Amino acid sequence: MIAYSNTEKSAVSFAQKLSGRLEILSSLLQQQENQENDTLVPIQEDLLRPWPKGLSNPPTRNLCFRNVILQMFAVMFATHPDIKHLLSSIENFTRSDEPLKEPEVLVAVEMSRLILQMFDNQSSETLSVDHLNIATTAHTNNFPDYTQQDAQEYLTYLIDCIEKASGRPLSALSGRTATHLHWPCCERNTINDADTNQILQLPITSDTLHGCIENFGKKEQVGDDKGVECEKCAKRRTFPISRSEYTPPGVAIVQLKRYDQAGRKRLDHVEFPLVGLKFPDCNDVYDLIGVVNQEHPEEDETLSLDSGHYTAYAKYDGQWFMYDDKHCTPITTRIVCNPNAYILFYRRRDTEEVERPIVSTCVIHMHYVSIELILTHLLVIPSY
Image (cartoon, rainbow, N blue to C red; front, side, top):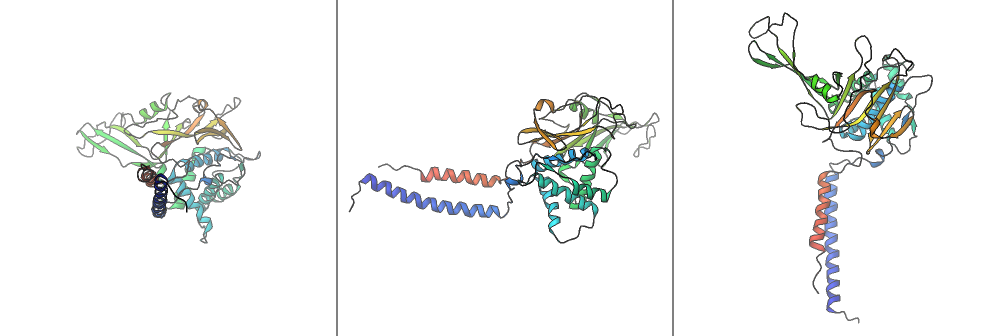
């Protein structure tokens, strides 16, 4: 029979108690995690890491205006949980037995499938957009393959298809613009019904984006030289003052209006921030996640929407990439702000990151509490 010293007996007793308490805590922790998992659907990491990928554009076709918008949906999918959830839900339509009778729904399904394919470990580095193009052509002839089109119009079209498929507005992209009117004749203020808009079409009135936004909401006189009639006091020659107020959504899409009604393009270089954009009357802060560029070669004197070439920049996992159809290249931040920028995508900073698997904050807190319990209650070294 082996004789143990008092110190050895105390160590064995402590080890037995420690083992028992660890088993109890492990069981409790597992129960808590199971309860949390009943309401949590963690994002699978393998759906998030693979993108960026290129998109095909055969020489006989002109698909760059589509490709850049699809890359923007990819970055929104990767960085905004509501958009990811919505596109994933639409993609599931293909797995049901219900017929897809509405052509807009089929377009949304094919687009969602393509976006999810970008994040698939098994997909190739360059993906085909043929299925989406076939669905689009079957629904509308506004976006033929063989001519250049306006990328902003294609973006609006895809948003409409997504809303048709989901049966509700795409709230993550839905900003609101309200018009405030001051009537000096009777010193009253009115607010017109706010318009919902997914894209803020911003006239170029400054050499900075901040200045353009400020000028967009600037006060201006309404009416011609004769004024307008006030409904309250019935004065006909009153001149109300108008002010526009824009409330940005989770992802604010800003189009720089480079084309006038005659189709002439403005080549102004507008400086825009990569981080820290703030809108008037809004406390939220926005960071840039994507840029659509429209470039024209020097020999192209038309500078029209029907010519030129589209490229895109998008940020993923801290790195900026350039997308030029099938080519995808890492770039430095210093070239992101460029004179060819046409559409800017800003994400509200308080939107939850989804570039890594989402875990509920309560689960994270639970793990920290468990570690603290172990350190406090278990790893107390007894005195021998």
